[in-house]
Image: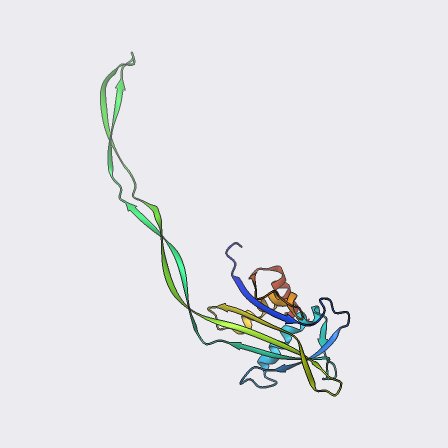
Amino acid sequence: SGCATRYQVRVDALSTLPARPSIQQSYVLVNNTPGDEADSLFFKEVGRHLAPALRKAGMVPAVDGSGDLQIAVKAYLSEPLIETRTTYNPVYMDYPGRAVMVRVPIVNADGKVVRYAYTHYYTHPRRDLAGYVDRDLQVTVYDKTLELNARRVREDGSVGEEVWSIKISLRNESTDYRAALPAMIVAAEPYFGRQTAGEERIVIRADDEALSAFRQALANGR
């Protein structure tokens, strides 16, 4: 379990809402991803993942299509990025086997050495750790980014001022956005509709119980 994959998620959030809103708010999601259709399957999948986290923050989907908030969703994958990583590789020394002659004393009944016998034995080859050498490795990585911007909806249906926003990103070697999405949302859950003190970095393990519960809830349609 100590070797489980770790996701480092960056979260940056701003909000004008009170820390603990007393009234549940309804929302409508709109697609703000450049080049993506307003009702694309990808947008719907992102919205399905967002629903549990927004519910925990006191927000529920609007039933009549005109909620208290309009939340613009921007979900995208970056172009390939080159990242330099330093690796520490072990260096080993090989020692061959060798023959060793040993002199063994032979004693008589009085305990005196009367002569010596000579015998040979052989040591086995061995490999010992001599140290470490660091090497720079060029790795191609991708940023998976999710941005939400929530604006209040006026009584006449027009969109007003922004009340909260959040930017979530995860960088690794995979281009699979959907695979990264659960870890991104679980890491950011405490900050939906809240404020961070600058960019937060949250580490989520692949075997984290909260992540497993989130995936299970999605599979069960919750």
